[in-house]
Image 1: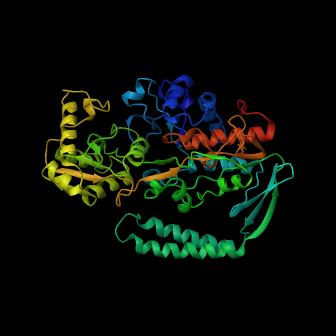
Image 2 (image 1 turned 180 degrees about the vertical axis):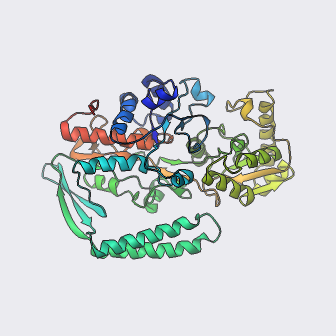
Image 3 (image 1 turned 90 degrees about the horizontal axis):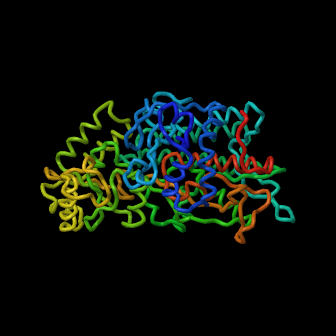
Length: 504
């Protein structure tokens, strides 16, 4: 999914009013200075053209609009609010506009229903466009060392390749078998670890082939080399060093997000920044009734407007409340939730996760005090919080976090339920991914060294570099930043320019 705005063709077709200035006003609240104002402005001004550029290369978008707040809409909707723009505190400074552009091509109905492999709707058309124009792809190949000349310019790389043949075929077979085993049962379900043991065995066999059958290759970079190898959320030692509070989260990405691209940049003298910045996604909507409840800490106090985008809620939980939090519902919201996750009303992964936690991942009690005791949180604090929230729901007082009365609940009807929504919740995984990386020149994409100087011939893009999505994350912003920063690096390396409007 791509975060795009400023008046894209898809927005216009859906009747969504947006402009680069409006998009800039909103993103300024989310990025929090992770890039300069001029870079963010350029990102917003290019956004509509980026959608045109992708469309010209075979990526399909659709203008079916989902107007309300959700973490992810039903499969018939391809444009939605994938951020916090609908919340009052944001809407007061920037007009809400749906900017989440879901890719619509190359996906089966099953993929859309399960939300698996959705990035292929954007990646594969670009892959095919490049292949048709003679681009040389080297699959099953790892860059292990940068080649630098005496002047300090990066001129190439040393690679390890698993050549086509029997060894590669066996490697692929082990990898696919392991992936099928992983997909059979979600790892959060009881007993899943027994199945995962077999998957790990197959992964180890694949790794053994990789360790013994790869051959060395060297490539020459005549105009430049771009590091675009993801972040480091799957490198647990690296994560423990830079962002230990997120270790209990669920790593989101692929095993290739091991920090190798960042480390390659460091070997050439590159500088890094925001390495402690990680996004944690705590989505509680759908069912919408959950977001009408309250999320509290150990003191029984709320921390955010529960209608906020999941990364905002996850950030609050991780950074300010030691990764611990509970969602509090009453009997009325419990029943409302069950109705909202009935068959056909949500996607399967949303429905099943909600059901699992309402059955097995919750605590229940007849009173708030008894519930607080079960959770080992402050009972008086919880009761005070619920009373203030009740006043907001009844319109007697304004909500502490600006939540409209229509999104609040009185929380009067027992039984009361608490669902663990902390980072380490066993039955409610909190996806995490890293946002820091190599520091780049924001005009060219070249990696900068610790003295602030550009390293000739070396570029970085996507989650290997600090970029537009290195502040507070919203859905689709990492892909958008990857395209923005990748085009920036490619254009500068090839033509010495930072950006030009596509002629295609």
